[in-house]
Image 1 (cartoon, helix red, strand yellow):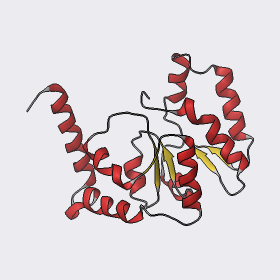
Image 2 (cartoon, rainbow, N blue to C red; image 1 turned 60 degrees about the vertical axis):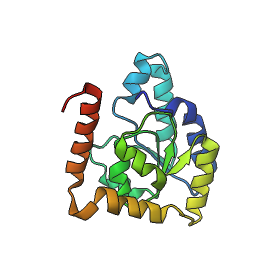
Image 3 (tube, rainbow, N blue to C red; image 1 turned 45 degrees about the vertical axis):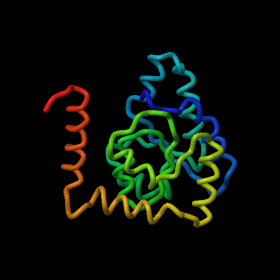
Length: 178
């Protein structure tokens, strides 16, 4: 949650959906996001209730807190996200990912994934990517496919093992073991 830019982008994202008839939003926050925003004083219970009501009352917005990601992944055309553990599984769908830069340090897989993502430092950048992708332009498709094939599905390697190895490598670097 330390790498989130939700507070800076929320109004722009929700307003964009409200203003563009062809755009829908499945809002799937980190499971602890609201708890974090409350405990840090960034949002009040009333502000969270208002936000959830805004989503509930809009015909093209929905709130997703289902345990499984499958339905959300199937129902979307792209992922707009900041740092998140769902980027890797979403990459396996072949659909575009717009990464909202937070300045958070990425692990080795995240660093190698960088060239396969659309980057947005501002919502204006994200909006440009959304409009372009919606118009059928996806110049990152080949890079995304290459990343998935070379990094996630490399030589039949098990992606779970690759992720575990990456986590172990990070742990060992931080704790100076091995």
